[in-house]
Image: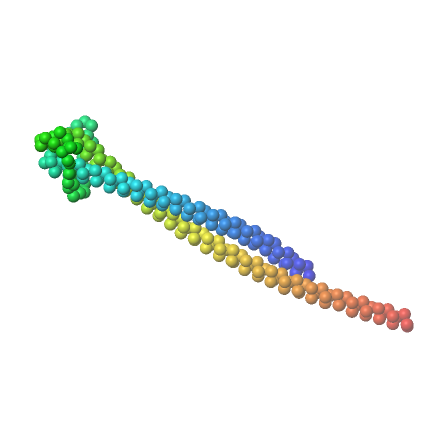
Length: 231
């Protein structure tokens, strides 16, 4: 009986350790679930900010391109060559105006009442090509800066998405491992409980048998004493 009792105590102690491990795994699973949720929320915020900023940059670049097209069209319609204007210290380097998308040339309908003096008098407009070149150079530089910002933002968002997916993959592996561990621990606990039940059953049977044996011996002793008294 003492041997069975020791086995039961060992199994119970083992189950206590198993329950502690199960609790730790469940706590880690809950923590991991929270981290995955927070990472997902953060990624959603990043994607929203990226999409909003990108759309704004694209719109701004389109507006600037339209402005450049309108200025160039005006000078071309008036047979002026703004590209040949002398460079100035204030002008930004111009990569190539040929890279800027050409819009259809606008038509300017100016009444004699609202026209400038040169138009109203029929004189040719000479234009201020040097100042206009400075403006075109600055506009072109702004467009290029916006395109660079868009390219940088695209690269950053792609890396953020790659990092997020890598985190999800690692989290999935960790989650699966912990869930498998919990399942195995629960199976071990159930097995131990079964063994404890068997040991308790054997112990109870043994105790009953011993009790019956003691009762039988007592009765035999009583009969023996009775015979001796009668003799």
